[in-house]
Image (cartoon, rainbow over all chains, first blue to last red; front, side, top):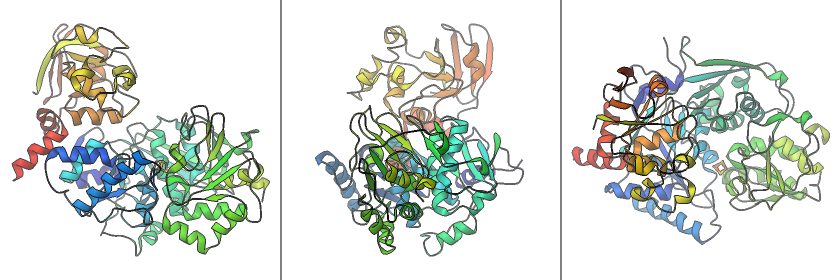
Length: 420
Length: 167
Ligand code: SF4
């Protein structure tokens, strides 16, 4: 029997002919990532090992993005640990405020995540890079410490569920809606321990930004990875960007899957996930009346250029509802700058929305838009757990950027059709 | 230590990290302290009853919930030599290996072993013997490098050892 793309990548990095689901393998890693929450702990563990240098300073990436620009003294101390470690280890891929972005928006943009690679990160949304055909997964801080020393780690080979998307996308339906719909179908543990492979004619036409959104949320179905085989769109994206040579890998025709699930996307409308789990998704027509206090457009899920363009298209010439705070956060400095050049930022400000420097901020209830008791936010982020954006008695609803922008105008969760 | 023998302590499905070590005891990361509260909400006297080398047996999705490494640490420090379950939550699985707690997935054994049975485990061969009933079960054997991590007492010590050997 053949192998899936995930099995192939593991076999290749573990120097094995074949691997099977359930097998434990030791594999070389191509890139290791940490942020201002997880890296300080990993750095402490790394120092316990007692060696001086990381295995390769070009393959360790440190991004202070969660509480930056430092929101208080405690977060400043954490960020300082990273900064000093980066300097002492001569880590080139350390991104200080002003050069940074939200890690999972920044790394693909910089051409640091490539097809056929293994990427581990001490952050659960490391699975985002599956969109480029990499096996990318979240790990713990101890894992990160050991991998920084050795350049390898161990994996249990996951079985793979194949998702095939066919048909024509409805208007305003994006990668975000496909993944919210999928999680709604299979549940938040629907792919526990397994890899998700997204494929089919719809995926082959999907933009890179939308693909990154889909892979980003694989973890929200419990998956270890959410992978998309590379194609022309991937190669075009990597042109002039890729920092290393790479070799794409593909599933064999006779690869074994634990399940194959097909969807006709013609049946999928823009989705909204109700509190407090991403699996509580439903079509926009079934939402009912949900008044809002805040709308957030940003995060590693939907803070990319395509997202800002869609939001601006809807907000152009309109005003945000007087009861609503609209916060727009471009994912990286580059996205921010491009949005400026295209006049998108102007549109957001004319509409009376606030625009922030790149940061995770409100996505994890850190800063830049925390909710009070009883407040309700609609967000293009990926998690709507209890208290995720602030007070334990606040609520978060998840959606795509078009729905978010339309709802900011009407003051309640609305279809983009209502305002365009 | 690739072979172990002890009394079975049986638990059910979906034992989460809050049952293994409640958040109210997380103000320390000292294994000896954590051990005292291991499984306290499922069995308040577990720590006093368990003997060194005993084996924990549970059903599906053992260790679900938070990513706290304190959970496997408290089990290991309580003297448990190995955990057998139908399945483990993904991060608990990684954390257990990384801190040097052997764990085996074997649904058959997890179902058929009863509380108090004497169980023998050979990690290298993946063999589980219920000496009380005479039944033998087979799990996937532990690959050599995993055994090395366990033998070293966890991932950080394993890496230390490995780097010294390479020099
Ligand atoms: S934007 Fe949100 S989900 Fe993404 S890395 Fe930051 S905190 Fe995590």
